[in-house]
Image (cartoon, rainbow, N blue to C red; front, top):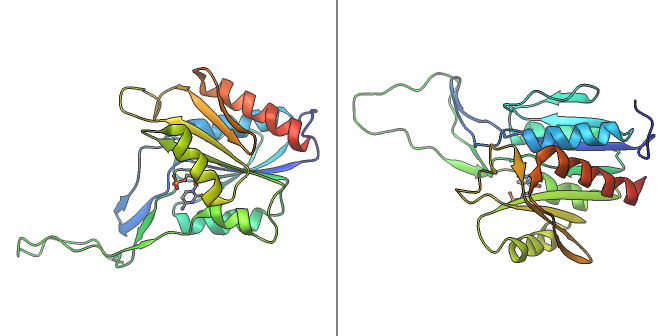
Length: 219
Ligand code: C5P
């Protein structure tokens, strides 16, 4: 572990999308690459933290020097986060699927000739950020992300209150920004003190700045 202001601190980072199976070969997913979460984990590692990196099936590889827990579904991600507690901080950067398929099949679904597609029944997934924010073993600092397409600051401020986390890192993922799946990010940090707009910069630079703020708070 590196020497730094977070030496002796344990931070849980969630990252990537989740996959929600329909049958053995099909799943519901989203376009998260896992790039921002991986960058945050690497930045925290560089400041000396022990990092539990709970990742869904991401496009970018996990950073070296972190404890990787690879999961597929939202429920597995929740269980892995719980197993990683206690922690001094948690950064929930994963794009967790809001719903899972309730009537998934053990066997590959096949067309039955009727022309009627299978009806998927869905159920809401656990909200890991809300859950950890109220958990008995709540980390001292809980940070969530918010991908918004409009009224970024207002929506993210409301989300911070609703979820019960300490900070929200909000970004505008409107088409045309190139942020989702891209290498840069432009974020607004929402804390109890208000909203701070950060300039557009590389995801690695956002991660370094966020990790430095985390170190100021729990280091
Ligand atoms: O409600 P929304 O999905 O916009 O909230 C995003 C934030 O909540 C992110 O930090 C994400 O990691 C977290 N989240 C979660 N579990 C869910 C849904 C979102 O931890 N089921």
